[in-house]
Length: 223
Ligand SMILES: *Cc1c(COP(=O)(O)O)cnc(C)c1O
Image (tube, rainbow, N blue to C red; front, side, top):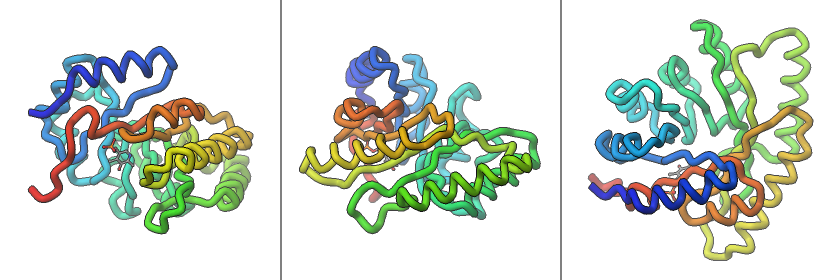
């Protein structure tokens, strides 16, 4: 087992002092590893594959707050809506609409973050700043008709470029924070920062970081 409990304790302490929420990203890791951090008090865990999340959720304590941080396909929303705490990667209006409709069927309210494309990489999902404003305005209009009652938009999520150029990464986080501050909704959550860049993200105003490999060790996708 490669869980680094010392790293966990020190990162947790550092983030608690700044009131930043730590989401421990456990994708590809076994339930024993998750329990090792659970036993130390960790409750927020992040996964990005639907089937893996569903399997783990069934085996683990029910007071875990599960964060879905991957790209979510609309036809899979129904599998996680019954228990998921927060969906970070909402990157289209249609996905948002589907989350609401599945959640309304079971009378749940699901927390969502809108994903914004902040890197210069083409493979990363998310809204542009303009698309985000348009979408939020559309939702505001529908909300006056009481339409989206089963989703709570808590804020924004973004991923910086995979780059050694930390000033570039910092600039991308800074842009996301500017966008976050421009939104007139009562947003509370700005999810940005991973193992390699969470310190910079926190300096730039992150309220929630998603850290995997620093806590659980490197991931092995070959297995
Ligand atoms: C895997 C993943 C993380 C964690 O990455 P690490 O570099 O291992 O900390 C964070 N966010 C998302 C969206 C991920 O897919």
